[in-house]
Figure 1: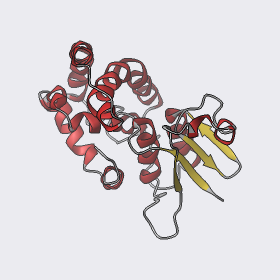
Figure 2: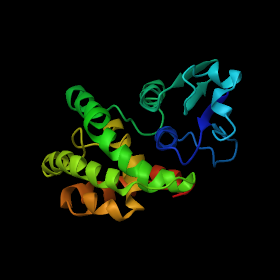
Figure 3: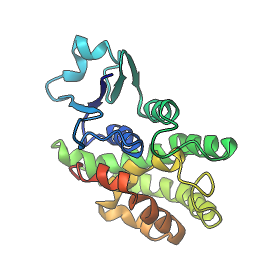
Figure 4: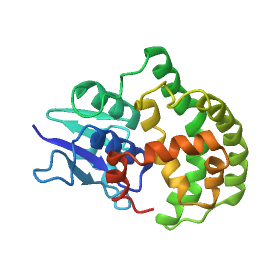
Length: 217
């Protein structure tokens, strides 16, 4: 059964999908290639070609193909892989359902909007030849600071976001924080001791180290 991930390693959303596949031991670096990473050339409009639009009619990366089926939207991909391959590799759905669902939602609605704007300006724009707008960075840093204060208080009482075990709730945050860690704004994490300790823990996971080695940041 062919397993393919269509995207780009500079895309935080593609990286989210790569991270879950590596946690599940579906490793495109290993002999035999359990999954194939298929680059989509956005500059030439590869994401708008009919064959790609057949996979994702919105023309966005990433897209995950598992045999005859396909999934798009990075969080849908991580949830699909965590569920479909629950018994393979790390069980990413092992926490209390209430806590897990809450922090999955917090990542998407509270954390990601301001954090993505920061890492897009500082990490992604330079890679694609665009200029950074520092006023956006500063405005969004103020917004994310308030959110991260909540994380800091929560992680003072919990090892991981959904409890005592690493789950999909933690994993879904990793691409954005990694890109942030390569910028001058990493003090947003580094200045909060419990948040910093959590990041040092999860970013030392072998599956994440395997993911990070292929990233261009």
